[in-house]
Amino acid sequence: MTSLTAGVRRWPRQQPVLFLALATFAWSLAYRALIPLSEAIVAALPVERATPLGSALQFFFYDTPKVLLLLTGVVFVMGIVNSHFTAERTRALLAGRSEGVGNLMAAGLGTVTPFCSCSAVPLFIGFVQAGVPLGVTFSFLIAAPMVNEVALALLLAMFGWKIALLYMGLGLTVAIVAGWIIGRLQMDDQLERWVRDLRTGGSTFPDESPTWADRIRAGLDAVGTIVGRVWPYILAGIAIGAAIHGYVPQDFLASFMGREAWWAVPLAVVLGVPMYSNAAGILPVVEALLSKGAALGTALAFMMSVVALSLPEVVILRKVLRPRLIAAFIGVVAAGILIVGYVFNAVLD
Amino acid sequence: MDSLFDPLRDGVAMKEIKVLGTGCANCRTTARLLDEVARERAVEIRVEKVERIEDIVAAGVMRTPGVIVDGKLVHSGGIPAREAIAAWLRAA
Image (cartoon, rainbow over all chains, first blue to last red; front, side, top):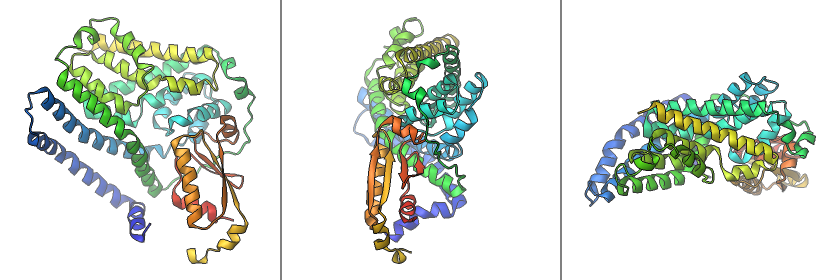
């Protein structure tokens, strides 16, 4: 807490433009230096590259810095974008919105409105109470964990922008359509009684408009909290991916995760539900599965199922939703993911 | 600024603070930060944790943790900055 550290912490806010320019420059320098650096590290290791261990280590040392750097960059930019969208503002935009357009907007806003998974229930109730239709609220809640900055950063790092865009488009489509269907099911009576009876005290959080300095702070905060939280998952994911990369024989997975196996997609979805991870932990594994002959649709269906449907989430939602509505939520989303997997496998080579 | 700060006056008017959250990591960090800043500034506070989802929602909080200082909602979502906490403690 010396004045020096206080000064270091404060200057990005006093000189936002200078800070942004310097940060961009430093980031791109680091990105350029990355490949030679990881090559050098792998070359310095006392193992043959052609051996399983050598190829696993190469995967690990090449992917780790690339993924962490891209993640830092994307999370910082999204932190700034997110500062334009508070939950309160999003709710005001969605309140009283008709279905259809509402589902579309909700899914889009779900990707940019920041909220942590522990806020899912208060947010859900806050939305429903303010007159956001149930199905529209679900579109928001489905899109938020599935299409977010972490998923975007990792998909970019590992598969390139085409697959990243495809995943985001399909994730949004699942969120929009699933929310719309849930709305059509007319299940408003499936909210727990206390939620329907609840009257809020009316104190709402004041809506301030942040300055550029505040937004940069929001970006840095996002890097601190999000990267600080997910890096162990990423390391674990890359380590598992590296092991698959080095030790699983080429095309080993083609027989049961390939495109010919019709039951591969449903199996991937079912396996994904009890697994609880974020995009950060699961994507390095998906990349390794793909390199061993798994079909892209099957792998992406697995990933969507892991991040969008999870048992802990269901347990939390049970506090506000009756079992029938929870079953409808899981069923509709799982069906959507299933279709995405099949379409992907059919369309792509 | 801090030399003008009168610990006695603020010590008399103890601040009632509520941290609203379901017990996630961010909520615990927020409560700890409140304690730390209050001790640094020699402000007496009483921190109460509100963990029942019904109470959190009834207070109008959508993003946890929420912070209520002397009955007024001052924060919602994420860990508050130290400077922000200091400002809440300073305000009469």
